[in-house]
Length: 317
Ligand SMILES: NC(=O)c1ccc[n+]([C@@H]2O[C@H](COP(=O)([O-])OP(=O)(O)OC[C@H]3O[C@@H](n4cnc5c(N)ncnc54)[C@H](O)[C@@H]3O)[C@@H](O)[C@H]2O)c1
Image 1 (cartoon, rainbow, N blue to C red):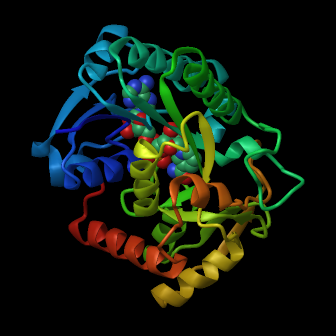
Image 2 (cartoon, protein in one colour):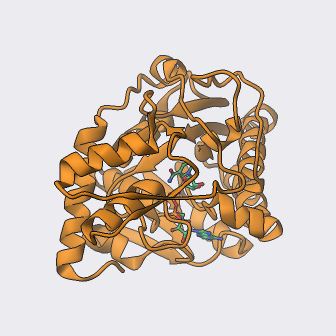
């Protein structure tokens, strides 16, 4: 049986990836400190996985985590631009030093491949849209810089030590289990929550900023392809829907889907946020054979169903 480690496996993306790996017959171990991850995210497959609870920066725990593992999916991070602006040192410690430490432990343990969760924030306010992987990075926040440096470490570990790595630059991922309640929650769960609670939705900026959304199950699929693609070794690949929509358009779609009348309340733009984001997805197609399959209407519908169910159960944790 193939053994995989998912760091951050109790988080939004990590839990979907873990669920998919279990379904594919992998033996899955997760490492998570539950700083933003939730036990509830693991409910449906808890008995099928091994859980190591603790911090990625704990060297002895990391050594246990990578033991006997063939593929590591590195999702653990403080995944927030605003937090990184407030706490550059702590986030650097987790997002960059933690990634380096993971690569080093993986190399020593003879792991075959590490797939790294990188971020589209690397492009900053790119002058060229759609953004192609060859553009020079332009990080606008500590978080973006930490992720860009993590990508570079991945490439270096392939070149220096022969550890196979693939960095996946996720664009805006959305779907069930994404936390709508955190102070820094992503836009889709926030909008859905506002809509279900019949209150206005907070929009940072004028709402005309654009994002390239991708449904979480598609991201799990991209990870599976990245675990085995020969052509992708040492490479950096955009993972996105390949279309961009503005936040105002997103609200209109949600109104159509929910039948509600959620209204925006505009606030000043946040420091470190990019204006427009749109991926060139050609390399993902070429190296991974990957194309996102879930149209935004379908993904929003599935996400809405999830949050309605959670609301009805009165339990989000
Ligand atoms: N959600 C997106 O749109 C998006 C976009 C680009 C990149 N990413 C990246 O994808 C990955 C997953 O993001 P997510 O949205 O699922 O976030 P998330 O916060 O739900 O998941 C991160 C997980 O990592 C865990 N974690 C954090 N610090 C840890 C530490 N020191 N030790 C052990 N575990 C730790 C958290 O408890 C959580 O379970 C992150 O690396 C993030 O930067 C996400």
